[in-house]
Length: 317
Image 1 (cartoon, one colour):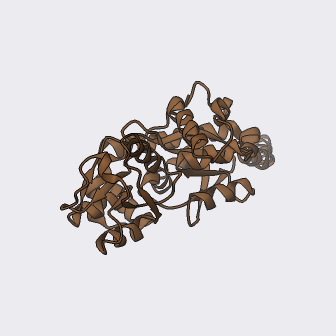
Image 2: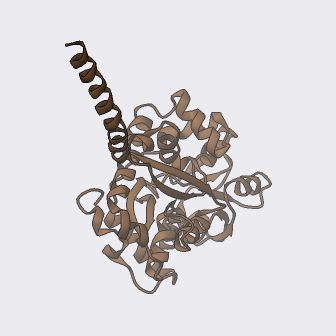
């Protein structure tokens, strides 16, 4: 009997040892490495949902390994995606619309926020009180294809108030305003808040109220191969949106914004609640921007629904 018990014991040990490698290999096959995305990003508080999803581990929750590649501006972000150096980029919608119209292999897969929060800022003593007062004025703005610049130019043109645009980004535009080398500056957050805190005032605040602002754009290459992973990516961004919108000036949200953009903390606190994040594409608004780009001579044909990925129909549009 003792011999039989010893035999059974050693048999059980041998079976356990034999099964161990199989069990380990089976578990290893079920654990998948995170899927990797590279996001080309010109850092701004308008992309705060990207930073929150990244820093709060939301991407990891969906099995995604997201690397943010910093670039100088929206055009550089677009070019890095088109060249294959990145998969996704955030940008002003006109940057993506013009690129797609001119044959770039990208699609807009989600909105970032709406409406556009760029506004005209002037000195408190400025005589600019009506659109007609803009006639012949020097106005700073980042680009003639910026949606806020377009909307203000259209309104001014309707009343004979066409202005001269000086192409200046936020910081230089505020400097030009302070030196009085321009009569006004079209700014976006956080530069609007920086200017307001310095005593400047916003005029015509409703001009951009119905314009879609910023889109998330992906390469056709990644859409063809990994659309389902991209859907998880957008879901993670939407989770980040909910966290931000619940309290835009919560300490850790503000800290993340400062970390990525270097903007003054007080400016972020002052204006962060103006950024209404969403992932739902404003298709009609984006197509209307395409019409404006045609009028400006930037594109010959409006891409229409070719702007959007069919994989995201029913999800973000």
